[in-house]
Length: 169
Ligand SMILES: [Zn+2]
Ligand SMILES: [Zn+2]
Image: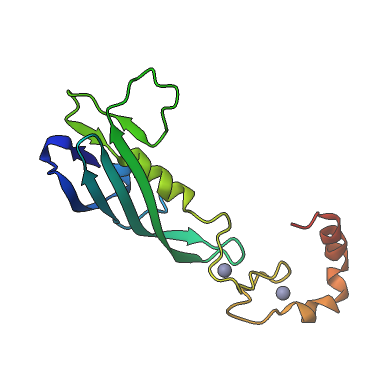
């Protein structure tokens, strides 16, 4: 996602583009859909401010029921292109140094980081997902547990003892 400095006009402008995960060096293969990026750029006399937005749907696997589900990611990022001295100790991460020779800057790392940070800590297909029964393995969103039958079955007793010794998640 490269921005050509000389192609920008003074003032504000918006650039929109459709990217793939490889354009942004995203290695997570849950990013199977195109990524829509929109850059709101303001070019002033000293610096260029970029307010970016990136949107896509990622396909995640639910931590509880293990079913795949779509998760809508909509993230923002900002970067400032500014002619600062390289020795400036206050150099901010979001500032890209501009020199008179700079004709192109790559904004991919900003979009990349925003998208990765935007991923949920917990993957849940829904807040109310009931998960999988550890006993019968049934997806409880789709069907009823059939464990009750086997609980009274003595043949399962040795196995039950085994199961109680395994630490629960
Ligand atoms: Zn689920
Ligand atoms: Zn069950």
